[in-house]
Image (tube, rainbow, N blue to C red; front, side, top):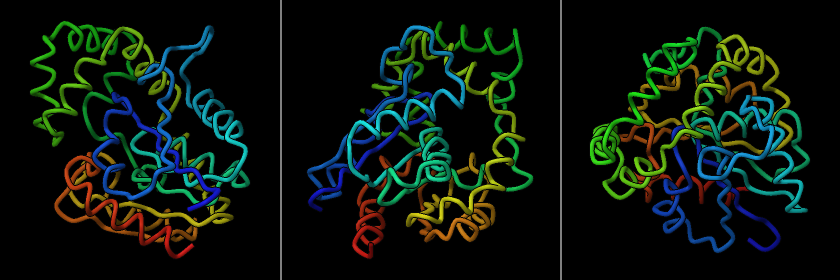
Amino acid sequence: MPGVTLVLVNGNPETAAIWPPLIGELERDDALTLSPPGFGEPLPDGFGATFDEYVAWLTEEIEGIGEPVDLLGHDWGANFTLRLACERPDLLRSWSVDTAGCFAPGYLFDDVPCHIWQTPGAGEAAIAAWLALRVEDRTSINESMGMTPEVAGALAEALDDDMGRCILALYRSVPEAVLSHWGQKVSAASARPGLVIVPAEDEYTGGEARHRWVAERAGANVVVLEGVGHWWMVQDPAAGAAALRQFWGEL
């Protein structure tokens, strides 16, 4: 696709190590991975790791590319992507996300760690306990959530104090009401073609009905990936790549 860069943005608690299986299936030689500060890249001086700061970071990174891009975000990288699609569609040729349901009415962070991270004191204790685990134990936990051994190990090794501080700051900057606020503005993302990816077994992003609520208002296509969960890009990269190629091929 001459003149178009594919930009992939990871989430939490991750690095760009999640992307190679998918990139290998995509048949594009223009892929650029961007890891948010603290999640695979160093923290700039004074960076507070809030939702607003991450969206500003992503905006600046894409502005620097100098041409509209195909932007694909996963997890919090997807949340940054969808908000950018609302605020700066001029920077994009297309956008693709797998967390659209988080922006729909009534969505709640329904896994226990998120609410613990939002709680001062309890969040710090939880991160400290996580860091105290052996890398081998964190790897096993990651594998139990559906990651391949290679990716599970890479993310287990990447967890450090900076990532822990960023997790706490990010979640504390985004109560569910903030996501709902942007959900009410999501029609602005219809200025560029969008794809809402629905991993059928993902327990974290609100369910298919909420994904479709956002997609309808954003004028986006929807693809349901059967048999995979939150880490669909490592569980079945071929299926994910096929859906993305079809979407881009119709632009």
